[in-house]
Length: 476
Image (cartoon, rainbow, N blue to C red; front, side, top):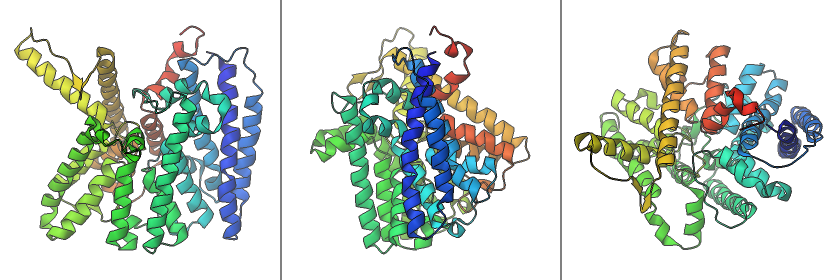
């Protein structure tokens, strides 16, 4: 392991990250609030970043092991620095760390029971952490800094492990710039629409940040239900669905390449959303009229499956069948290359096809079939990766749930809280339901959930590799 190279890159990330704190400082000045929390965070980030930057490596060959360490520790570092503003306003360290990690990983689980009581600058910071984390901190890092772009492939792969990166352009930096340009285009579009629908500029920008990133932090304890506006709900649902799609598909569609509408993952994504909406609407007819049921079911299906986590109704009051559908959607998640979390559509599709193939092979051992993803034949290595990911995901889910359950929480609360955090969804069921927060959870339980968020956002392998002793040895 080239630790000096890892430290050097972490230093660059923290120096770059410190510049992002200028935005909440500007908001503090505008609203005549104290900007001390963000100045302090900036000083810490700059100081630590400068110290790490001066670890000059003997060689700058960036292997995948260094890239994994840089990405995993980079996300951990910005989450720790990002909790400083919460510490300054009197929140304890674990709760601050929880809120910060939840922001950057776009989980949306919160410890604030009444966010409307917080300073505007803190609310803006919460939203900004989700916007930065949505497309990926490393993607932005590669897009902005030319000196990093040459080594970007390994960093990209570490931030999105298990997903084949589609290079929109031959140069990786150009790809990163295009992805962020599309992200900005959608950000401006959603902000404009929400503002035209009557939201204040502040509510419009914060909810835009937390919708497109599929984050779900709201400036109101009632979430989107606060606005009592079906048009606002429709705009937010559309942009959450956009956030849950592969951004490479957005690029091709914006160029008029309509054949990408036939993309297999996109078709499966839309099919699952429509199916879940219909089932939820039918199940909720006992509680609502037809139009109301469609309204709430559509919004909640999109919000949960894209892992945005906004609510327009307390879905924990729905019947068991409807709640089970939402729990399943938490596991599925969005598309590869999206801002969404969960297992991802591609993996679910490959895993399903693999399971069906194994059933056929059990019936007819001599059968010779391959797994196809659209017109692409899936290689055995990728199938192995998907199966390993699934086993690890479920194992982490089981052990985390077991730990929380033995801490005195009921199984519904425990299982759904873990599913919501490892899937980066946010709201769960029971004591962590749509109308609740995570403030009542003990600090040691929050530490487990922080770990789940971190592991889930970096899709398991990147984080778990840090705990393998051979990972830190010089030889791979």
